[in-house]
Image 1: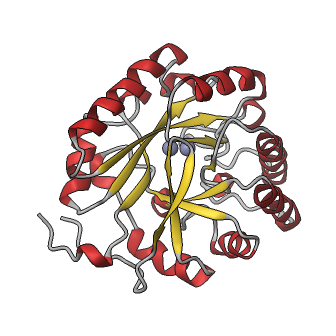
Image 2: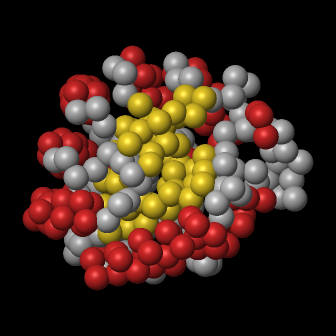
Length: 283
Ligand SMILES: [Zn+2]
Ligand SMILES: [Zn+2]
């Protein structure tokens, strides 16, 4: 057990995967036990629902959604009074399945629905084995495609959170021009639609070496009144809360004083600890 100061940590992780997505290890309960041992107060399973080719093999199927939902509900009850467990989905945007996404997100009492973009226009921008990761795709083309697809995603209303907003930077490919205007328009649209942006710390373990989104985007989000959640994108229990020590000071510097949590799609707030909130040592 780590030494903890429960009043001075931000023990919230809103992006945790499970074994159902076929590329994460350990049981759901192992994630919960790890989070409890770290003094976390609330975690949210946000497992993949990807129906795009390629990518669907790393996801639960629509038929598995009830199984997943019920498994989280059972754990939620088991850990009452110890840690808050929330049930969410990370839905991979695909314009051809929006009706199904709407139906699924409306049929179960999920606490939160996130939407992300791993395969804009059917192109893989997330896997290490992709052409994009090997630098074999034109950066301007991929950035353009990613931002155009993101803009379309945000037109829809089946979700609450935009996950890893600038994931396109994952492998470090640099476009020849700035896509700042496109990002600005997207932030503006997110603000108008009152969507929440996720701060995702998995970027620190990718070639991008920083959180998603960048500090610049995060600062603009704050100025535009966009709320944030915080998550590690853990695919193993050891990654819960990864790199919070690096990101929490940046979140404060960007102007935020709280992060959002959700209960049955309703947002509420948890204050950020003034000192950056990383008073635990991971062991
Ligand atoms: Zn993702
Ligand atoms: Zn994820």
